[in-house]
Amino acid sequence: MLTGIITNYLTQHRRLVVPQLGTFVVKVPEGGVVFSELLKRDDGILRGLLVQQGGMNDLEAAGAIDRFVFEVRHADRKSTRLNS
Image (cartoon, one colour):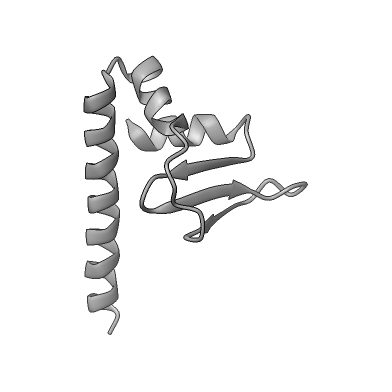
C-alpha cells in the first residue's frame, strides 16, 4: 500500500520524503527517480497521504511509515550480507 502511494504521488510531484529514511526525487526532464538519504526530516506529506488515501488516523499512519522504514532497512542489511 505504501509503495503504491509513493509511486502515485511521484507521478505528479518532484519529491517525497520518507521520514527517517530519505527522499525520492524525480529527475527532470528524463523522469527517472533517484533516492537521497540527505533529507530525512518529516514534512508530514507522506503521513497526510496515508490519512487521506489509506483511511488511517495520524498515529496509524506514523506506525505504517515506521514499519516501512524498518522493512527497507532490514531488506538492505540482508541484501548486503548476501552480497558480501
